[in-house]
View 1 (cartoon, rainbow, N blue to C red):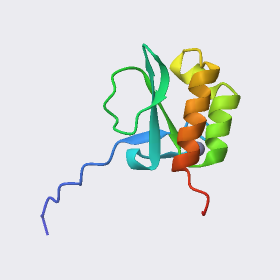
View 2 (view 1 turned 90 degrees about the vertical axis):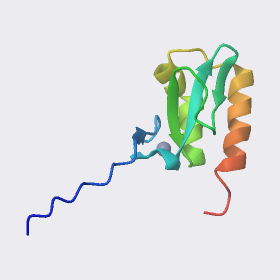
View 3 (view 1 turned 135 degrees about the vertical axis):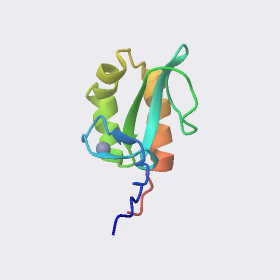
Length: 97
Ligand SMILES: [Zn+2]
């Protein structure tokens, strides 16, 4: 057998800033530093420095409360941005897992 089977192109791997779990992009939520602050980017289309957090609420807490996000994005996270990201996380991390 000399079939040269091309490997499927791997999905981009991203790392959660809190738990450091590496997974494919779909399992993580992108967060971007924009001119207006640090925002969630569910479309993945915003330009800017990005970081990723997985869908666990504990990881969002860690990322927001312990400065992981600020460190990763090299930006200040304002209280307003943190509130918006917490609300986003609450809506997307689900309560039934
Ligand atoms: Zn995580």
